Length: 227
Image (cartoon, rainbow, N blue to C red; front, side):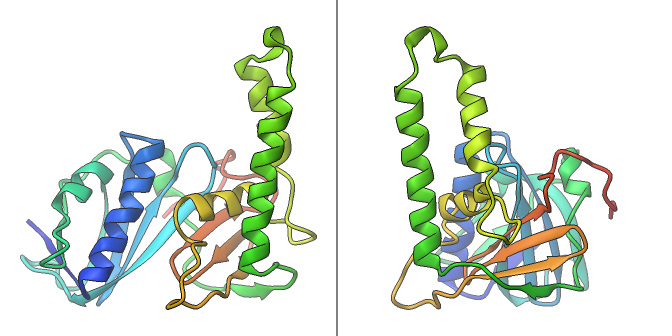
């Protein structure tokens, strides 16, 4: 079994927290792991948000049992979480699973360039709070006979598909970043958030992880480069 040696207990705890949040939205969640050297990228897709979430994890050393160059595999998020040993700062890579369609459709590794117009993290968190409050208010105002799943979904799509200023980034991407712990404020970590683009992709990046989405389409269309 391949064992990942994480840089420290904090990296193990952050990985476990990320996996737990993904599993909150999808108990059967899968994640794609890509690593080379001492850098590991963990990709997941929380279904409520229609975005890709990427958590970067620092490794203390390459792998045991033969995988000493690269790793690229899709696994069960639940099984990976169960294998995380925070005290030892290790995680065992579970057996591969048949990946969902999104696992073969990842953002490009390079070619990212900065985009202007992204508000500060405090303003982004306030934006999400206002959108949540609006959704709650509008759904509570519905007459009981109109409070159907279709109507709730329609209101949600209208709110979360709005863009952040002129950036083209949908508000749902910011909501995902906050819900997955990527926008949390702490005294010890940098508070900067950045917006980057590469081709049709936009990427919201913080000190804790990234949210990637295709400009204007989310992930609904799979006419993307598969790798």
